[in-house]
Image (cartoon, rainbow, N blue to C red):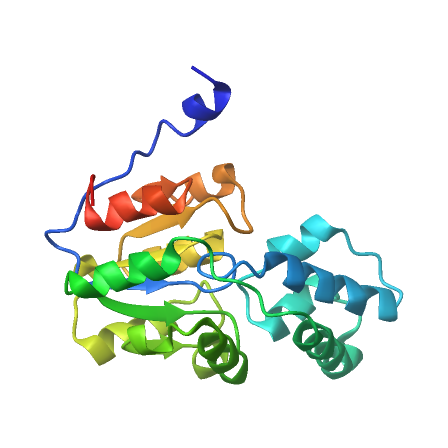
Length: 231
């Protein structure tokens, strides 16, 4: 048995399809392969303002609302945050469209066919979310989406509470799915189970510390968690 298999032995994929009515997804690093673009844009900001920034530090704040991320990465530049955000947006928008992770469109369609409602809770702002939803071609699959400028930044649970209120589905019949501790801690704060995914921004150890119901190494693992083994 390899070290990787030992590391991933707990938690195991869980089939909870009998009670699942609502699946809530983070976007960047969970549905869309945009981590590299976000990190590159933050590094451009740091270079423009002559601030030392390690790529791993930039990667680690993904999932937070951009104003909160700027405060964490550049605490001594409060008077320049507006200019920093503008440079970030210009660089991010100038890049090619980030793709959706392979297998995700099929997973979302199959969840809808099973009667599971879908939602998004993201650190993006509304204009940014609407743009990438349109680019992905998946926007019609989601019954509701929430962005950080419509609530509070993760891990505050307000986005999830708004989604639950809109759908009328109780927290124990919903699940929060994301690639960062911010996602999983948000789910915990809202009283709902969570699933971590390993193809995004945060490492296994950080996700496991949040005690999710499962951690998926691949999209196929996530499919098994949400739709059952053999789905």
